[in-house]
Image (cartoon, rainbow, N blue to C red; front, side, top):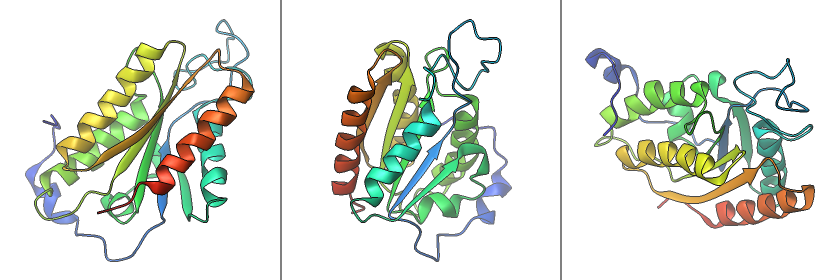
Length: 193
């Protein structure tokens, strides 16, 4: 069960979505790519990621692959998701996060606590769209732990959870391209019931 310190009055402020959103909403958090782990410019959101590849670039590549499959896609940084309606109106929601000490990044955690907390409180009145998730990390268990956090929040909100993708820092560009393509195909086939 979600443990969110939300006031009871917040529930009445959100209504079921009235407009159809994109086929796929990709919510992500990521910092700027870093060259090495010791790079002084690296921030807490980037985790150690190779130059040119981070969760933001994965989200953009995923959006391009989904658009090529004729899916409407909206890619949005986690801190720019402002309403529950943005989530509830999407056909499929994909959440991407770097693994931060075996968990999601703080912007994704904020979305879970605040927006999914509201969905949890409304779960008998609204239909949570199906979800997918991806994570980038140095080691697979860290990425799996981040995805597990997302999966638990979605399931607490009575949402279906589908495909996942893990990208490791050591993965080659070819491996990343192949994984993104496979993930996009799985998402394109994953639909709201």
